[in-house]
Structure formats: structure tokens, C-alpha cells
Amino acid sequence: MVDLQRNIFIIALLIVSFVLWQEWQKDVLILNSTIDTQKDLHCDTSHNLNHTNKYIHNKQGKLITVKTDVLSLYINTYGGNVEEAFLLTYFKTVDSSDPVHFLQNSQNYVYQAQSGLIGKNGVDNVHKKNRPLYFSQKDHYILEKSANVLYVPLIYINSEGIIYKKIFVLHRNSFAVKVYYKINNITDYPLELILYGQIQQSISPPSKNSNILDSSLLYRTYRGVAYSCCQNKYIKYSFEDIKKDNIYINTKEGWIAMLQKYFVTAWIPKTSGNNMFYIKYSPNHEQIIAGFRSSSIIVYPGNQNVLESILWIGPEIQDSMRVVAPNLDFTVDYGWLWFISQPLLKLLQFIHGYVKNWGFAIIIITFILRGIMYPLTKMQYMSIAKIRILQPEIAKIREKFHDKIRQSQEIMLLYKEKKINPLCSFFPLLIQMPIFLGLYYMLSDSIELRHAHFILWINDLSEKDAYYILPILMGLTMFIIQKFFPSAHTIDDPIQKKIMVFVPIIFTIFFLWFPSGLVLYYIVSNFVTIIQQKFIYRELEKIGLNI
Image 1 (cartoon, helix red, strand yellow):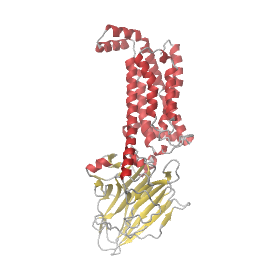
Image 2 (tube, one colour):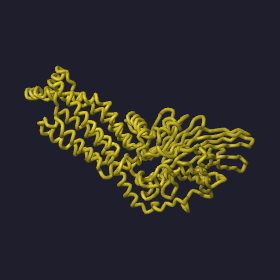
Image 3 (cartoon, one colour):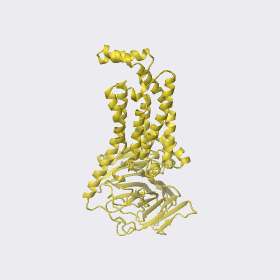
Image 4 (cartoon, one colour):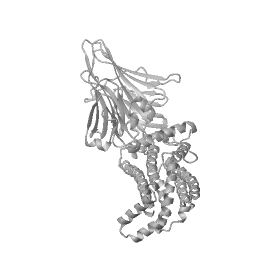
């Protein structure tokens, strides 16, 4: 019995240690990046949102502003790149009213979405960095309150009179931007064109004093590139992996994206035929470039063709991304426990739809999960009670046989004779631990929980409790579970007694760094355990079994 409970404790300790190690790795990244930033004498600490004298790639183009209810974009008429993006419904920090500054094109940090036409008759010469200078009727485009769609047309006419229209289409309450070209071929020969779209980002994050995202987010998050194609639903590479080797994939469908915590930029080509996805490292500029190129498209004389793609700029809202492109919601990477995290998020969203508070939704989902697992919990205590009754016989076996292997064999024969399955005592724990890890990934990486207020001082359920009140409460509930129930008073083994004393303390220390939402789940779970134990103990006493 002592060995069994000790093994259960070790399993739980290892899993919690794994999660703690991940949190510690984040803190190390923050510390290292802070040191690097302090060494960088050229960091951009005076970012000016008025866009004066800081664009080094404008050439003779100008910036036009495009604003909807959720997005604010700055598009350069030289090439038509999206050089800056603000997410108007997401804020830099919990207490800030400044929107998340997502894409940027400054001297020290570049993160932008580019698109163009190359090929034999393309107007974009990416090797010589020659781009078309588009004409825009307005400098400011704003989605009116009465409208649901905003069109931003850019026009370029080459020396032969061929009209190239690059049109951005933005919808209300959407982070998906349609980018399509209309080419009117007035010549007497066919035009051969290739549509491309790419995302480029500096490897080194911007200064933590800049207005990019919330404080230190890029210093503590995974950054990489992912794609979906015909052969694979989801493949990802970290920036470090990409620096080692360039990647090229041919596919008829899919998307390619740049990832970081909570937010993503993705190109979804909509042209017929094959597309080539590419991911490469630019050592000269210390940038990662990811994008697509369509197959060659012919525009015949006197004809007009439309080449379309979709650009997602913004938060990882899984339901919305799933509609935009199949498997795009996979960019919210819950790891190998995605099959647990995703259903838990669905259930949490359903509950939140009624209670309108993510903290209360977590409390309710805890009661639901523990209610579902109640039969297993009862089975666990039944098994422990039966094993405890056999302790005198087990002690005799240990005295009789000194060989550990023989001891185990005789004890297993005793269990078989009494029809007791010792696995039942820790089987519920094995089920709860994946749920615990699934909740950890879901609460840590879901945009829905970012800056989610609960009550009083808990302003962000995805981050640790700044005052460490919840972890202390969690430790107290563990202490109550151990202290005020019969099983705690019948332990004679000194090793097991020490384990029971230190378990609440160790777990409290570990939980200091865990997301508040996860700690809240564990507090409520312990509270449910206290209630369930009372009922189970009463039932066991009625049938003559005591723990």
C-alpha cells in the first residue's frame, strides 16, 4: 500500500514538474531576451504611431490607412504591402487601452505581409526590389457603421496600358482580408503571371519598450512557421529549425502561417492548380520568410482574370479560422493532448455563453468533470479500503519472504484470491492527469482566456496570480483533504507520513507559476473531493469497509 501511494505521488510530481519546467523555460527566455535588448544600442524605443520619417521601404509610395471595427491597417501604395496592423479589440496589457500592435515595419523590426505578381509579365520584380506604384483615390478608408464590407482598390497601369487592380476586401468583425488582383489584358498577346504572397519577420524580437503586443509577449512565446497541405494537415517549424534548412512544398490546397502565442498571420491561396509553399531564412537581414507561389496563370488577349488569396491577420479564434480555411485552427497548438484540450475549450465556451465569466465557467466545468469521474473516484476508495483490510496479511508475506520478487508474486496472488485489482486505486489519477495537462495547455494558449477577468484581483486567467492567493488556497484545500479524514490518522509508516506533510507544500510552490485558471480548477476540484470523500466514507462504513 505504501509503495502504491508513493508511486502515485511520484507520477503526479513528475507531471507537475514537467509543466513547471515549461513555465521556467519561458522565464529564462524573458531573462535572456532582456539582457540582449539591454545590449542592443540601436533598439527602437521611440516608436511613433504617426509614421513620420521612419519608413525605409516606402520609396515614392505613401501609406494609406484602412480601418474596420476590429482592424487598423497601413498599406503602402508602393507594392501594396500590409506594413502595419493594429488589432482594435485586443489590448496590449490588461490595464491598457492601446490596441495590440501586431505587424510593423521599422528600422529595427520587420513583420509584414507582402503580395504581388511575378512571372514573365509580372509587375513585381522581387530580385531587383522594383514594385509597382499603385494609385489610390483616398488616403483613408473607414468601414461605416451602416456597412458590413469595405473595399480598398489600388490601381496600376503599365507602359502598355495593361490595368492591374489590387483590391483589399475587409468585412465587419473579421480578421480575414481578401486580397485579389484583377488583370485586364488589352494587348494582343497572352500574359503569363504568378501570384505570390509571403510573410517576413525579423528573428530578433523588438525592444520590450516598443508598442508591439503586450509586454514581453514575444520574449516568452514559441515563434515559428506552420503550413497545411494535401499530404499533411499541420506541420510546424521553429525559427531555429528554419535557419538550418529551407523548405519547399507543392500542394493544390492549404495555407502557410507565422505563429506566436495567441496571434497568427496566414496566407491562404485561392488560385486553381498547384501552389508552392516556401519557408526560408534570410541571413543578410536576419529574417524568416514564408509564403506561397501559384502556378503560372495565363491571361489571354482581351480577357480579364481574377487571382485571389486570403490574408488572416490577428488572434487565433479557432471557430473563425476553421471557416476561413480547413485546419487553420490547428495553429492553436495544444500539443499531443489536443484531443482533450479542444473538447474542453468547446465545453468551456458553451458554458461561458450562459454565465459570461470565464472564471465561473471554469468552476462549472470542474463540477461537470468531477461528476463524470465520480464512479471512478468511488472505485478508487473502495479499492484502497479493501487493500487496507489486507495489510496484516501483506505484512506477514513481507516477513515470510525476503526476496522482493517473491513478495510481489505472493501479494498479487493474495489480491487475485480476494478479487481485488490494485490498479483501481490509481486508475482515476491516470485519467485526471491528462485532463490536468489538457487544461493547462488550453488555459495557457487559448486567446479566449487572454486578459479574461474573473473577480477582484484576478484580471487574467491565463497568467499566474500576482499575489499568489489562489496557490495558497489550493495548498490549504490539499491540507484539509489529508488532515481531516480517517485515512490520514491510520498511517503508521514514517515515510508515508513525511510524504503527506510535504505534498501540499510542494504542490503549492509548483502552482505559484501556473495560470490562475488552472489553479482555480484545482481549488474547486479539491473542494469537490472533500465533499465526495464524505459521501464515499459514509457508504464504506455502511458496508463495513473503513479506509
